[in-house]
Amino acid sequence: MKGNRVLVTGGAGFIGSNLANSLAEANQVTVVDDGYLGTPENLHDDVEYVEASVTDDDLPTDVDVLFHLAALSSYAMHEEDPARGARVNVEGFVNTVEQARHDGCETVVYATTSSIYGNRTEPSPETMAVEANTGYEASKLARERYAEYFHNFHDMTLAGLRYFSVYQGYGGSEGHKGEYANVIAQFAEDMANGDQPELYGDGEQTRDFTHVDDVVRATALAADHELQGVYNVGTGEQHSFLHVVDLINTQLGTDVEPAFVENPIPEDVYVHDTLADYSRFHEATGWEPEIDLEAGIERVCSEYVE
Image (cartoon, rainbow, N blue to C red; front, side, top):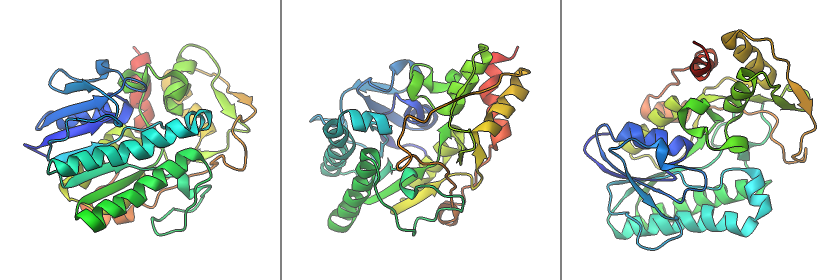
């Protein structure tokens, strides 16, 4: 992307700030964030920061492209206050897109979730049946339905990206998030400080871990191609939490054993395994993941290794 006016909601958070900083190299970028999961310290000086909620009026939506990443982004946040989760994730989406539409913006890229696929050891295509088992998943599915409405009724293009387990280290943009940071960042921080990382159950659960740099490239490409519909963004590979711990030990030169703890999330809603089928997105944009897990964890651990 070059020469566009861009708004990134949730743009001071983890994925949002990485996206905003990258886009600002060749675009005019404004960020909206309420400071709950983000901090302006994540942003480069050439990114304009506006402290506001996506449920507010008069958002700075006079832009060419809207990237809507703002969300309450965990199961726990929604179970603590389901109404707030719906306000931010659903009402905030509709409110922001509607303001952008009135300001003439026709291209939207938004974050949905891969959690709706449930437990999968086979690749998950966008065409498979999905269901909402948590408030978080329900809110993201609602976004997808409202995106259909904006496309069918208002002729906008809205690409919903189902991200798979995005990660980066605390040296990126998640140092302030603590327990809400991605698990690889949490494990690396614990182990670098000699603490045992806590693994739910036996640690054999798997994720399709996708480095944030690959996610940023994918998100920009979705706007460049003015995609419509939902697309998976993942690597097509899955790795267990135990394997992640082994890789971190190798990079840090440590031998820290994990601590196995009871899973606080009910088993009937806990997603044990994820795996992306990203072929639809590849066919539309040519995107391929470039950073495998070993290289990604090397980047995560580099801040701890002299």
